[in-house]
Length: 60
Length: 571
Image (cartoon, rainbow over all chains, first blue to last red; front, side, top):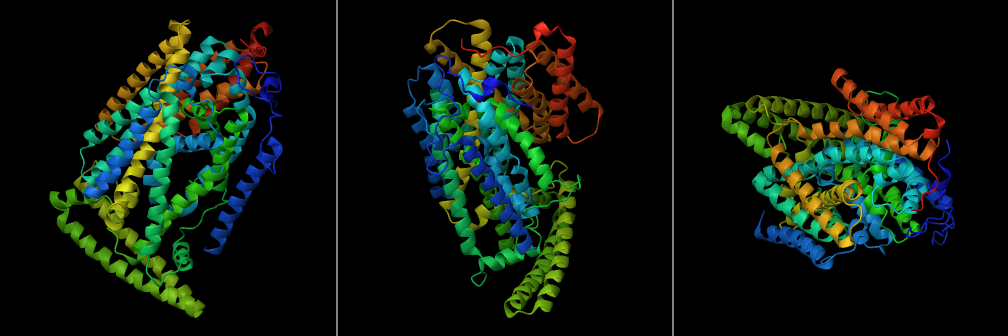
């Protein structure tokens, strides 16, 4: 299922609302897009789980 | 506790509260009072989200969980990073676009007024009840172990948090949470370092982990599909995803923390900060408990960690039985200690056969040790049927009081209270905001000045604080209340999450269908709760699934004119 169109926040914000554009820069040196940030966060999650699995295996 | 500990405890707690009051005095702007500093950066948002979630129980009970069951509990957080990504990508832009004060205001824009009020009411009921427990749960443990009066502990800590939350609103909550989290991390890091220093001099960290692993305390990930196992990779990933979506995405105590960012970027990065660091944070708290377990393999632990309950039973007819068990426990412990020395010695010498034998024998002796503990618990419950036989909540506080130096004890107790106050203040702030925005401003007084609404919000926050205090004091008289509050949360959470999922993903469903579906699903959950005997966690899923399905069915039955999402709200 796809979220409502306005959930992506690509339209102009209503008066008084803070900017919500998905194209807003991440301001991060190596991660230009939000998809890149989400991929990085997911990658960290995978790394944490991998390290926990390694700990489980090494000391079992 | 020594005078030095009290100076550290009172100095940090009162100092942070007074600083929060002083920095936010004279607050008259509604947006700042309800949402916080409009220029707040992502780090402050991330800290605030983390501090709101981490209550005192996190830092008192989680090490005990690590001591008792090892690292497996960390799997409960596996769904959280995924949930936070979904919230950052979908929920957050919506909240910011609509410039809402509360999550339930969004339901009003997307559906209608009655659905908004229903969502807000469900939040107020479950979070209002839980607010009392946020103060009560750590107070019962700390007052028991420190010999303080429970009612005074509840009232003093409660009044402190009410004072700065009422005065400074959301800005004071975020401001104080920064320093409270610093005290928490400072205390836990100090405890970790002191614990490492107190391990036997000839025991390396690898040896310590070897001992922990040998007693199955390092089994962090379990891919078993057995649904009877409490913590597995799958239950953590799926259940954790569902619970985190509910809590971070729809609970105003969290939504209020991250909608306040100066831009979408700051709010998103604040959430991503938690998505990256929550799992390692929980891992280290659990590891602390595991290392406490290792420490007590070389140091005689108490048979039962709730020393007050033990003393009561000794003085009320079980003395002889408990003393006998204590002697058995000491003998078994000495035998186990000898086997561990043999095991590690063989490991260092490369003697695999002796290592394996000593390890296997140590496990057998450990089971005998647990059998003695089980006998002691039976004797304690016989002496006082009201005593909790699970003493894991008392493990870490016992270690702190018995083995940490003065000053550090005060810092650790301050850390526990800081955690209690940081989550409590966010709850009160959310309860006051929701009452003001979704009920008072929406139903009673639509046109008034910011100063009027700020004043109303202060009164509502004070009211909720007093309700929570009264509830915490009353909780002293009720058994199994913590479990009861968890049940209340599970009974309501599923339906609230479903309202938001329908709002975000089911464009065809309108307010009338969502409202009646939520009411029907909530009724169904109540009926099932009183007629079935299943784990209360299932009601999260049942409520959510029922509400989503019913909203689709009701919408299909209604005229198409009553459905469909409203156009992008701009007014």
